[in-house]
Length: 270
Ligand SMILES: C[S@@+](CC[C@H](N)C(=O)[O-])C[C@H]1O[C@@H](n2cnc3c(N)ncnc32)[C@H](O)[C@@H]1O
Image 1: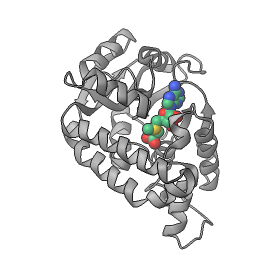
Image 2 (image 1 turned 30 degrees about the vertical axis):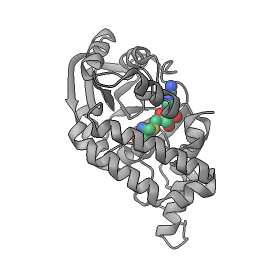
Image 3 (image 1 turned 90 degrees about the horizontal axis):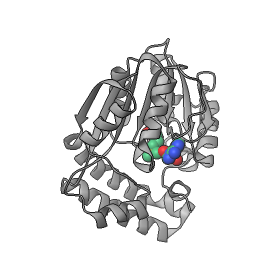
Image 4 (image 1 turned 90 degrees about the vertical axis):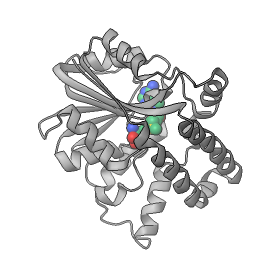
């Protein structure tokens, strides 16, 4: 079963949270009504803004968001910068949910959704000015294929900026195996590993930033949020899944606190 079939962040849970906040009223929603709930990465809207700034995104940019989830970051970019964003997402439910949420808040003119695999981008060479991705490449075995694809679809000089989990040398094989089994996290890279892959994919002006210190409190806060919304998750996925998810997330938080896992932001120019 796909990890995202049984994930606490879903279209249904986003709308349940928004409804609760608005006393049950889901009429005339704006993108801002969703932002507290539709971002599936660490650091919320500030993290999207940090990525956007490094990618040089303006109203004129054609932006590709790779592994876009429910397209929360894509809607934020479109609503704040006025740019067009194409949200590429593999999971059928998430891609459909992303498209419905775009329509619900009136952003379907600027944000479109394509269901597809990041390792085989279905776009023409040089068709985007900027490419972004947040907390997603951890799920992809063949990271070089994703990076090479992003390089190919960018115009010359276009910038690719992404954030992801970063593995340290102290992360053991058994811990890697548990992360793979429980959270579909695979071939985790160090910052240097990513730097080398970006070079092999043809990127220049590569920059890497270690975000681990910023992420440590954020991943703990995420566990607290998950516990606070356990009711919604239980209604959708059952009590057993809530307990299982809490356990695996606590394991992940432990690795971050022990410094075996961290976060990084990476950028390169085509
Ligand atoms: C942690 S979520 C991040 C979503 C989004 N970037 C955000 O910040 O809200 C990771 C997403 O990557 C998607 N994904 C995983 N492997 C993928 C692939 N090979 N191609 C496209 N999407 C993929 C998952 O389905 C999931 O929606």
